[in-house]
Amino acid sequence: MTMRRSLILIPPLLALLAAPGHADTPGGVQAKNKAVDGEKVYKQICAACHMPNAMGSGGGAIPALAKDKKLADPAYPITIVMKGKGAMPPMSEILSAAQVAAVITYVRTHFGNSYPQPVTEADVKRISKPGRSME
Image (cartoon, rainbow, N blue to C red; front, side, top):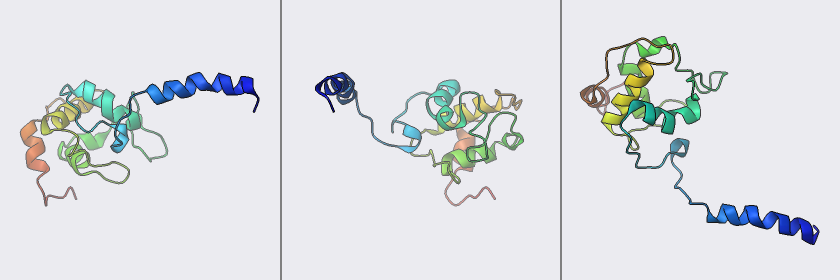
């Protein structure tokens, strides 16, 4: 490599070294997320995999949440979010029950979904109790 090429690479490498590091957690999420607003939680955590438009990744690897009939019963998304399934990691260590309730309510009322009954923090705590299975 010539001296000129080496000099060109130095600024980008220095920028990478100066960038703040974050601990690795599922989905690149910081371990202590404090947003309680459902839209903010979706944008900060869920959109990384399910996409900003909730259409998923295609091919079924990351399912679409848009126009999703499985969201009609809030027990299904609560269980998946809290306990995980397949490629979906459990979010119970990252999100509070209030955050889970907020984001599920947000998804159930947006992206072509029309399930207006809000999910409550009490719903999340009741449905995600240890030993309870979604099947």
